[in-house]
Image (cartoon, rainbow, N blue to C red; front, top):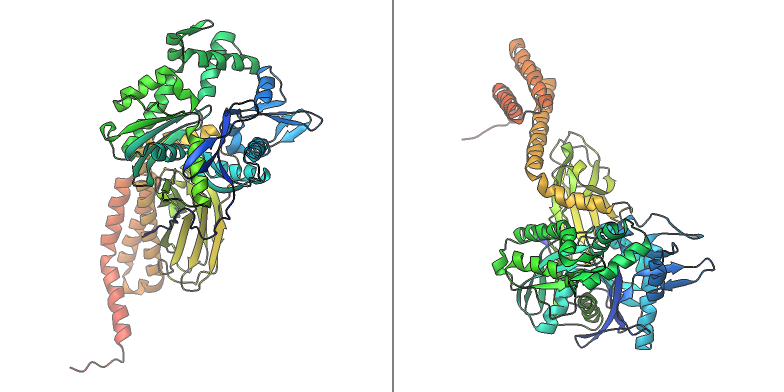
Length: 574
């Protein structure tokens, strides 16, 4: 049974005070801050008159911190004290980055960017700004999401909600254009790619499916250009490459590179995004013909080649009548207003990767499947595997593979003091709760004794971008092999359970059999154990069936003996 706990904006259990709350698009290359009033958002400009704030931070040895355009200029000149694209390191937010005499984490650097955006908003509003809705890539995992919240806290901002960037774009688009129907949100920014399929209907924004890759973005295009033209990946070469890329979005050639050569350079990465689009469409059980429109998000979508490829996949030109650089911050600002003032619009986001736990044999039992709307709470009952088992390890994993070792381990805790009962009798209720920010908490309770343990899953920072990409691609690449491996593991576990049950029965009731019967059963047990070791599922099933048939009479004898014992001294009057 699935339990959904959804609150209307402005009616959450902990009501927010009436105050200014902003929407922040914390981007890889640029960040944007906006504020909404009566459903209409205004993008805030800095003192230089621009709304795109470079996500670059420069540090001086005397303690001064510079964020934005001047920091970007230092980065472009190769200054090692200027840090760019820190968003890509948020999944490894515990890492130490040496900047001059300082040692900083990605969280601290991101906090400096958020602090700058907070100050910009306060100058524009003329009053303190302490609350924000911040957007994250749809495929940011738990550690990267938590790192973003930690950075906001350091910057003095309460995060009202983390929402996925494509969802924020749809929120802005739906309100601005009064759109209804099924839309694809293609979001290709400086460092990440996301694709989401959303259904917009009467003020309800429901995510049907989502996918992406945190290692594809405009920065990668810059790297390809820099390597081709300058044979270098340093800050100066990358800055020049970025200018050339932007020029190629508007004219046929720039420097020593023309559009055809540029298209050929980026084609493999663009193709990866299109493959993800097709996969997400399959997840949503939709065809391109059912998509009413494709909304573009992120500066990289200005590249003509990308727009042409999107048109070929979806059979229609993408919608280009909104500013792809503004739309995410606008959606975040509208959601911020909804969470502080109230709104008629309801936002339903989804879990991007399945969440589950490891059962005996290392098999994953998925509790919350990917693309489940959040917030959500789901409870499922489990039981013990062995007689008199008095404890259970709850191992929480994230991913789409069938075996625990193939997924990401999020957390472990132990539920003890389970009453000593025969295998399969104890009832352990495990509850998974994902809040509106996509963060997970898990509890386990033994129903007989009421013993309970719980954990808020705040994973250690350490999942690399390559590992994230692997989790997504391998789930599809090895789907068939994973099912075969799961079925084998299940057959091995079931056969092992049968052997344990027969050993237990022989230990207590061997007197019901003669020596030849006992010898035959033990011989078949040995044969089944060899089959288990062979990892031949058909052989395991065959030998397990032979053991079952061989012990069928023994089981009937034990049952008859138990009934006779139970009826001794009982009189039956007809």
